[in-house]
Length: 470
Image (cartoon, rainbow, N blue to C red):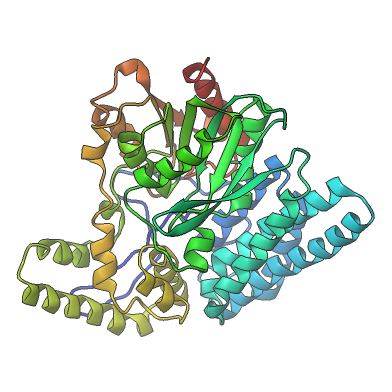
């Protein structure tokens, strides 16, 4: 069984230019390790099941509770019949159930906070944010995809309410970047002014702030690190509210974050590392090659090329072949490609339409606005042209900082790409590049190791301890 994994961005398409064909759920790319049936199968729909596994993993950082997750699973199964290929009504039920439990927790958290039970309130707000992140992930599949921004704001609101009750005050700031303001959150082990090594966690394409708790925040704090996470282009508020798409080059983005960090007296400017999660596990290569001030980089997991992972290779190839052609030819191919997806859309299963919407929305504003209308990207050509730029072999050759590459057994999307990266890091000595296989034996299998967040962070931070040793 394959799954459409959290913080990935793939859709399967078989659209001949100007033709009509069906789109389907993303499957593993050529060469990927075949994954067994996922453990703890809660839903027949692979995508729904995959997200549930991430919800379970969030419990490692206190951002979820197994009993609450099982409550949602049971109610959804009973109300939908647990379909393999859910329709809009089934998505409505799924999102409603996640939001119902989140709203209950928010009510309880407000009462706990008023009564002075700070820890209880913090935990409940953060779990509510985690469950609203689940709802946000699936809202484009519901009868009301236009609710996406509203659902995001509710998720963000509980996040802010939760971290406002953190034992050591979280430093909240906005980091300027090319006319944008990127919300940032600096977590510290203590507010004592001590200079500490700092890890910048660059979240994935559709991850929310609360999910970074188990992807670096709690692990880093436990080990005496400062940990900063932020919302960059194509993520969170910059995507859902400001409609700013993802960028292929993150070097200037990370530079802006490093500039803000190094102005602080409690950050050791010589010991700053950057971690890229999922899509950013690929894109972070640009920061490793072009950002000044980085001492180490983690690709979690590693990858180097997006175009081979998009399954509508026929349309993608058509777009690629005309990039240097006269404008008139490009316009004709664009019209054919756009007409093809428009004609295919009504004949596609609902879950496949959702998949295309979800995986395309972060790359172009056109795709985002189309997804919120329940429509295919009206400029599908422009979307395909955009993802053609996400290729990093030559960038990896320019990386000069020690690099840790995660390779997940059964990775549904990146497949064998991580294993090829060490050879591409030709500018590094062998001792400065580490490929770590995350596997069933350590519970860290599958893309983004949904059920092994603690175990994976142990490997990563043990390496960072060595590389960033004072």
